[in-house]
Image (cartoon, rainbow, N blue to C red; front, side, top):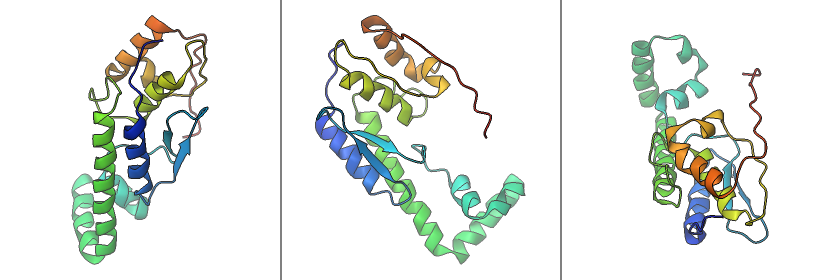
Length: 172
């Protein structure tokens, strides 16, 4: 297995940053006293999208044109400053996690959007014993995205895929 720097203190920073995000339930997983893995139980993105924030709270926004959405979002920000502040806090916390991921021991993280699955793929690899095995569900892009290429190449050079199953999500 390739010698990959352990994420020790870095992993602790990610855990702390995730715990500061009130909109996510952070889960810390450990394997045989290994460094922590962080999971955002709702599959959160590592970027705050204002449109998504407001449409989650006001579903009617989805049926509006982009211009109408922007006008309504400005109105909502003025009539609901509490929600505006909530989004701003979410954006700061999410940006913090994003910067931590970009600074972490995850080659390829800066190619395309930083994605949690890339960090998980690397952490699983880093935590596996030299003769170990990992069973994991990752998005299809783990096998095709440019940002996942260093991970794929490392796995193929120093290990291998014993089975890959592609699933189609028909549940939405």
